[in-house]
Image 1 (cartoon, rainbow, N blue to C red):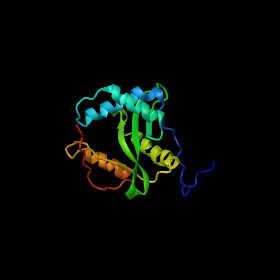
Image 2 (image 1 turned 135 degrees about the vertical axis):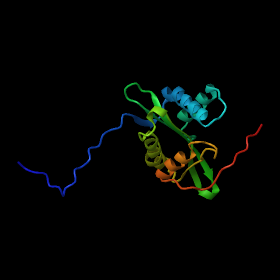
Image 3 (image 1 turned 180 degrees about the vertical axis):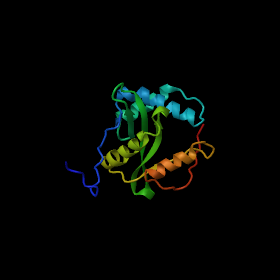
Image 4 (image 1 turned 30 degrees about the vertical axis):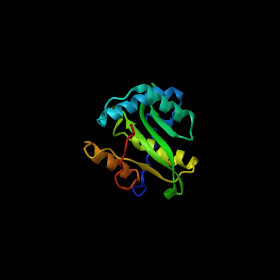
Length: 172
């Protein structure tokens, strides 16, 4: 009987996650809009109509020059369990285009399973190089958001670094 050599570490077996991450297609528009509506609810925003969110998702899916919409879905029932919406911006200080993560949401039942990490990883490793974009930013929720610390920790673990707060003015 041959005994395994204890000095040789066993190689971990790669197991595919029980979800896939892909660029959204028209079939994902409704699920993505529903996910964003749930995200806004979690952030304490007033309810928003779904139709304009579906229209915006449809525009992004149909015109990659605007940004990207990634969805994580289960292969068994094809349900959207997470999404990442990003837009492309151009700024003089960046010397060209950069990306902004506009929405990142994972269904609560799937949190803690690395779905969000896979969405960010797909954006950073696959989408942005194809678009020749070398920088991505994200705005964090308000300081009053109960999950701010966890959200900040998530982005730090994904390789982001703090750049300061953002402000907004909505025009009438």
